[in-house]
Length: 380
Image 1 (cartoon, rainbow, N blue to C red):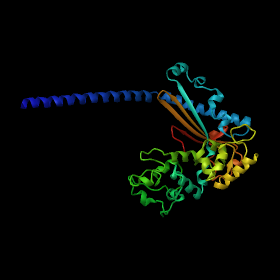
Image 2 (cartoon, one colour):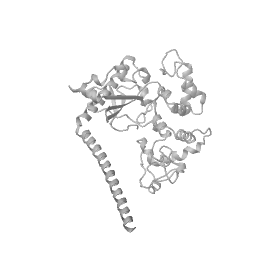
Image 3 (cartoon, rainbow, N blue to C red):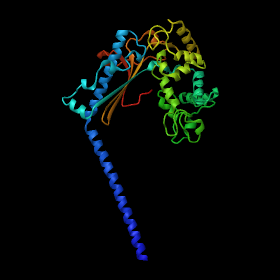
Image 4 (tube, one colour):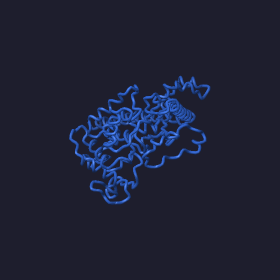
């Protein structure tokens, strides 16, 4: 009996060892496969350079199309004019831009895919032009979500925490937080002590990021898993750290959240605006704030509610480019400003815009490249 139990025990151990060997073998094969794939990717540096080249060519195509509309029509009102889809307008495709003799063969095996997203950055409100009253009201509305009753005090803690994060002193506001609060967190850190420069900073500010010890009053912009909430997404689409001039109302037609904010509690004003232009121009965008009496009254009411200067022209453009070939991809994001902005486009500017580089000036690029990032998430 004892020998039978020993044999059974040995058999169990043998099965376990065999299963372990199989598991290790599977994991090793998987690791070898991924390693070989990574080596192939790393060894083909010219492929990455190729995608980078295509990315900048796509940027040139976008700028060329935008500038073509600017020269021909004189004024940019909205991507709805036709410059929002440069490939469709220009008819340019990767096959038209062969960089090697074997391009056609390479394109057949690993086709290059382009995508360009163009948005009107000047259709966003300059972040530092929003008053305390309006920002508190905005946070309160966000906090209420679908609830019809909005408690205006609900937004104050977030505003106080935001101000404490930016100021240089160590005095807590009524519902804010200074270094002594953040030092007790895991890991500990300190407040910035300077104006906000990135939406990503909200991850570190009390209330905006999730706090396990205070789940009900935190996670406003980022949930427990670190994902952006709908409030953060709406905020990013509506405010800008780069644009500091007049807000283009045409972009609001695609951003109901921001349009609602500018119209305040006036639901009739909001519905009137979202109905779009009703003049004889036939355009799906506004070309003037004053030529139509209805428009003039409507925009005057919108300005009086938030005190934000409004216009109908584009003064800053965001171009987001993604180039893919197989599993490889290259991302390029640029912020563009006109070389000779109109006086109204810079009215109310908080600070001078960055000057173009000497290379930019010597090359004669038709637009100022204000910011250029590769393979980064440039939302700010």
